Length: 239
Image (cartoon, rainbow, N blue to C red; front, side):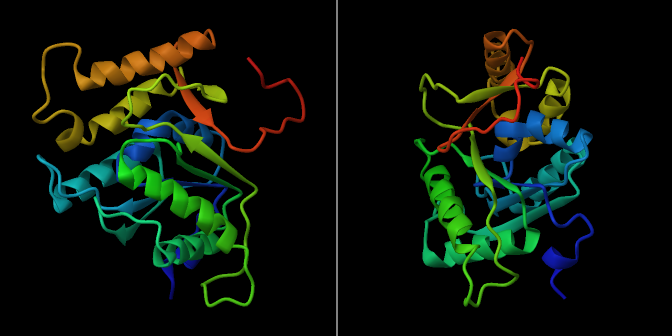
């Protein structure tokens, strides 16, 4: 029996695809907490284990991912088992993700921003965008029934020192502390072996969130991009 299809949380409202465990937390941990608190069914698909890293291990990264998922309130998280540092937009990877999309049936997809210095992040976005198209195909041996998510949005978790211009910024003032707690769960990535004199890496994450918050006259924010226009039914939700 396929656990993807029998999980009680399915179908999902939102599926977030991350190259590595910790990217979803960094890029949109605030949004995850906000959506779950509003009753949305949210899932995360990590494409790789994220290992090896200097201070991590496969077992430790799995423990950290489980802890972060509990902090965020996630009830569905899956690892695709693709190879860290060697992620490629192959037909096999596209089919794997398309099959997961067909089984989880999300309304919206979230993927990394399409410009980055990290090859895994670039490949992840290419995989997701192609898999979204493949997921709607009929007459195929992919698992599940055809499904086409309505929208795909892009979160920022980039390795470029770039002055980005997002399409919209989400107010995460009330969710910031929970997001930060989820990031801290990945001690092997962001705390162990890192400089302890301020500004630490954690300080930088807070500074970034405060910068995006200032642009919308809020304490903390998260930036997002979209290749397609963002649709609205009213101006009621605008800050």
